[in-house]
Amino acid sequence: MDDDTVRINVGGTMFTTRLSTVQKYPDTLLGSISFESDCYSKDDKSFYFDRNPELFNTILDYYRNGCLHLPNHLCGWLWKTELEFWKIPLTDISECCHKTISSYNKRVDVSKMLKAVFSPLNHSEYASPSGIGKIRHRLWLFLDEPESSTWAKVFSFIYLSTVLVSASFPCLKTHPGIRIQTSNATTILKLAAYNNVQMWMNKDNHKEMQFATTKEPNWLYYWSLVICIFFSVETILRVLTCSTKNKFVKEWLNILDIILFVIMWICYGIKHAEKEILSNKHLAYFLCFCEAVSVLRLFRFFRLAKQYSSLRILFIAVQSSVRELLLLLITFFVFGWMFANLVYYTEILESESFPNMLVGFWWSVVTMTTVGYGDVYPVGPLGRVVGVLCSLCGLLVLAMPIAIIAGNFDSLCRHNEEREAYVKLQTKQKSNIPKAWETSKIDPNYPIKLFESYT
Image (cartoon, rainbow, N blue to C red; front, side, top):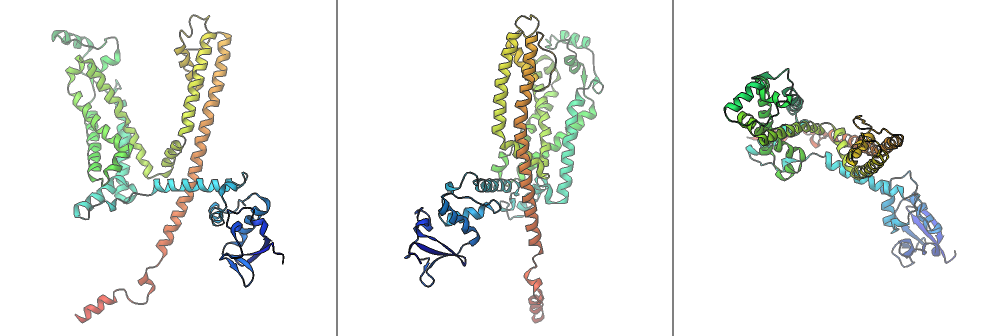
């Protein structure tokens, strides 16, 4: 045999190559071998490595051809560990085959993220071993984990139904057919003049006068009060029973509950000061602000994410597409001002349209989003050409980021389905493993019976 010829035994399969071939890359494991190495066997005059021989052909081709190409039908983890063993840097992988490793790394990152999101927090680790601690733990599971028990599922259904019902109350409060007439505008103005109270309301504004001359019915008031008490008690219990306060305040839904708790009771306190509302404009506006913010109670509907993984996946997809959304916002802003400029100067001869560029920006936003209110529109031929270009750019700008978000959502859904199938299989396998005393012929209660027989 030639002195330059070496034999390499990989997992029982013999490979023959030249020593000069493997020494092309001295920083790798094969490039540093010598006849004094520990892996060298003097009996059969070969270098032995306990590795998979099917993968070694690819490793050996790296030394022969100077480039590393990976078969894509094998797992990326297998190639990553194999290259780490042979001390071959990942940067030597050819560009056409680097997808195998990059896809594996991305899949690992997504799996870790999904596992962190969907793995339930073990609150029992923070629960006190005392009786009160156990009660707090059970109450927390009842309120926050719908899958913990049947009664927790029932409460979750009642909670979400209450959210949907409470969402309709602000609409009912403003309907003139439901509100009860208490007086008329003339009487209100006379009483204000008699008591020397300066009213801020505009008598020509029927919405302002409606709130001054009518009130919500008693049944609607008391039902709103009951719902307010329900959410208040639920929020207080969640705060008291939570064993990890730091993680509790980091969830945006919990912060929203606390804010709504304060705002709801502020609203009920202000509503009892009817005279002050009629005379104090700032107090009335503050009440309107609180009523508008209280509609955020609809976000409580997102607690369904604990029961439906697809809803939580949607949040993750939007979160992972922040760059695309930011790019959409910047691009939309740039094109909006560009078309605002164009339409203003192309319509400069028209006295009735686009009095300033801010109106042009409003028109470009409405046009690019394909809303088209029709309150402002170009009249001249050049302005209409700008309008066509603006609508076409709007379609292109809005379509691309939406496709990216949809792709992220589809990818995350497929990864989550595979994760759930794997978890279900592992859970089923663990539940089918018999206990030690079940596989034994000895009665598990035999030691107890034996002790009782002696006593």
